[in-house]
Image (cartoon, rainbow over all chains, first blue to last red; front, side):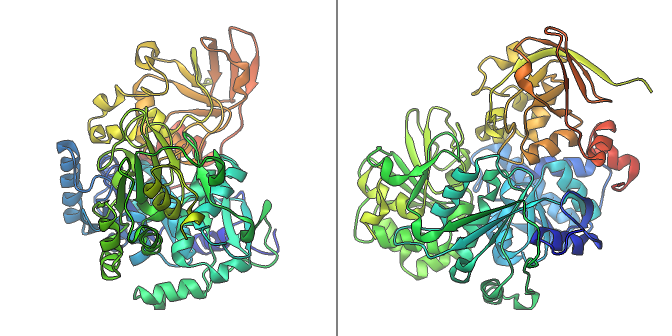
Length: 419
Length: 168
């Protein structure tokens, strides 16, 4: 047996009431389970097909209407009707159209260090920023988790991502996670846990941690875990659940399959090229590619800090006449705060379109579908062919600063020229 | 009990087939109408796929099959198209689990040894693939016993209906 435990082993030991070691298969209690509007209807049908009638934990079961919000098609509206009715029947929690993206709301209102969270969305992994073992699953697994309040896991081996130094001017959490995905590869961490540590964490805000954890799945990871530390405690206190805080750290003798060290001082703004998230290169190498759309938002980069960076760059300037600029706040709370701080004013004056809090243009359902041959610079987490609704379009991924600077110039631009 | 055998033809695909390739997000409005949704399977990645596929065929892919979204609609439409199993060098974890939960076998093996159109015979019980066209035999890596048990029951829902719980 190992002498020390990783974060993944610690949480799964606790939740399976045993000694969970990498490679073991365990049955773990589920603290929080959720669905969203594009995967929820199938989950509900499977729940009913299994002859389940009641939820194991109604107050810890959440439905989010965020992917088609507001709905652009009658079929999706009917899916919303089905989900609302299920919430009424079972007494689970429901967040309405316009409340925000499931992953942002899980962070704002629910996730705690040491929780096991499952959601029918691959970016459920985002809550790892708060030290929750949070992972995406399909509709069948979630249907069973809703009914039984538990699920099975293979305990993942962990990679330690040791972060030191501080971000240089114009370089952000998004650049770090893109760099890491480029280095690890889209399948380099399949079935593994990415666990973040190192001295840089002491300076790393929850907003930055959420951006990083959100994209761990793009390297194939099952979870992307941060420890529960002072920053976690402050975030929970700010969101009215400071009492739920418990410190959570890996053991010093924990066993890691790999250790990857990154010095943040050495990073520069990065870009994912079409059509693969791990096709990563420095922005400086491809300056000048024309873009028809810039999109700042999503569960990756639609938080207040992200809008602050964009507003600062765009304040008193104008978007390029050939580039549409879309802003998707991650939640109602984010939108309210961004209004209070004047960010929305600056962005709208610069020519931006403010979309309702939700997934917006990210997945090609509505609110910013691309035309044939168009290029979008997006702050989202995926650039697969067809992702934004058109297989003939090209998507580059970057930080909000890069997106804002590029929107002004109408072409891919290094944000260090602006900050 | 006799060994569980599948026989069919290989449809060869490349590396990194994402869930957006399998069933693009823009068709999310059809997710409560599975027969209509299934008509769009692999439409951007493999033009004409629905005309090519025959019941019992196998998808034979490269690296990281099914990366991306958690949409279980991806294995659902693959199964609806008649595909009997997926053979791939590696599979993304959510997709892998979803496919098994739908009772759709995913076998991890060296797919370099299989060509487009090859006739294959798969022994699911022992995890062995016979390429009847080339005569080459391939073994597949084993999945955790709980996954084999779920697959044997035809998917997670039938498994839970039968056992009422997870059995390790």
